[in-house]
Image (cartoon, rainbow, N blue to C red; front, side, top):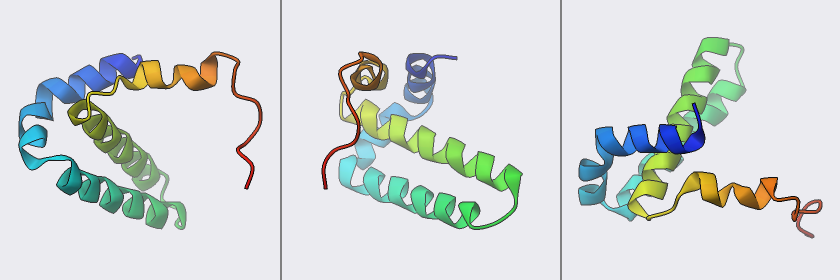
Length: 89
């Protein structure tokens, strides 16, 4: 499955409700999932890690959908060959 397909799947299933919730509240849900991923990464439960990575990706797609951002297009930043190294501190 491509990023665009997954983002579309999330859109079809949740976007109406997500738009009603709005970006600020949706972002809080996303951050909660990131926190759960952080906890999972500190443990040894591989199944939980997979689930939390999936949750973070789904909520990222939700945020992108209600912000009108195509994640696959956005990721071209990394696949275009124009990114060199890391940002300076």
